[in-house]
Image (tube, rainbow, N blue to C red; front, side, top):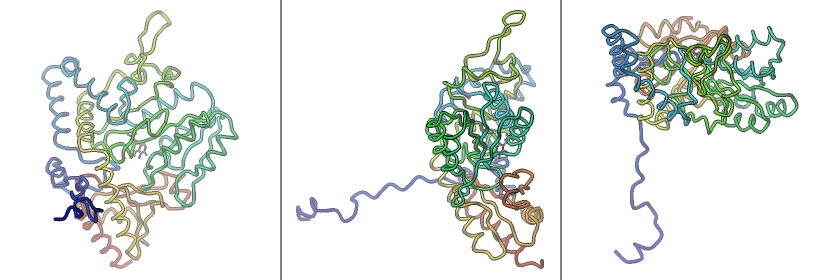
Length: 417
Ligand SMILES: Cc1ncc(COP(=O)(O)O)c(C=O)c1O
């Protein structure tokens, strides 16, 4: 080899670029017993947990059976404390900023009530808001006369119109902006970091419902720049049902008082006096499922160890593939807006009720759900779509699951109408 060939310009790299890390679907399936039962395409409802998560829950219930619930809780207190640390690591926060709940709806209700108790700002809500959260805000507005504005959509993306929001924030008084990172009714991904930048610039608060995004897409509270973030356990975190958590910005926390203080987060200090915990635990309740919280901790660790980027890449790729394949089929309409880079796909089949599509899929052991407009009037209702079929993937899914779904869809579209 001549010296020139060593020092001259490279036409190809000497070292092959390292292959991008990918999800080991076979390994994920091996540790997820439920995959043998069906093509589970319902992570956005409740994902399949790993055996380790379920074993952790069952083991603690057995300990409670043997030792008594309080005694069992005391024996695992180090592990329940570690759950806060793991969640903090997952979302880029500190343990003291984390509160645990039974559902995301409870977390949103408690935190939003505390935020609303600190003043009467305008409520600016994205069309992606979850049904129970929207009902809560509408009930508050009706009761108190607070202004509630539904934020307009950017027609090109289907996400919140950032220009319109900026104009509203500039011209109006103090506001709280509420957004679902991903809604329940389509695969849309809201631009939460852009919303964080906008709300900070205009001194507004931002509450992010990350119920469909934590464990699905990378979620870092600092990068988003929000004030409150809430999520549930059973969906993309693959934790047990009845688990959820919230993060509260440390600058906001001291001003937020729970509407109904609980002995968990408050100390009753004198006849008519009490003090609140200095941490986000001021929003928690004393009673909770220790077993499920331990299971949540295992699921969070598994999520961190698998890697958020690699998980997101797998789920987004499956979502894109399913959307593209559904779009290529006559008689099938994909209902996701343009800004839908997620592992959640919604569609309808011409002339066939979504419930009927779901039943056909269930008969072939393919699990999806239908979402009616009554679960999303600001999204499906506004688009005049009465209901959709929703398929949502996780790391135990691959092209075989999509093929199974598509072959049933083909049978439906080929059949008599
Ligand atoms: C976007 C969104 N937010 C909130 C929730 C409510 O979560 P939970 O059932 O844990 O209260 C859901 C449930 O589907 C959801 O999809």
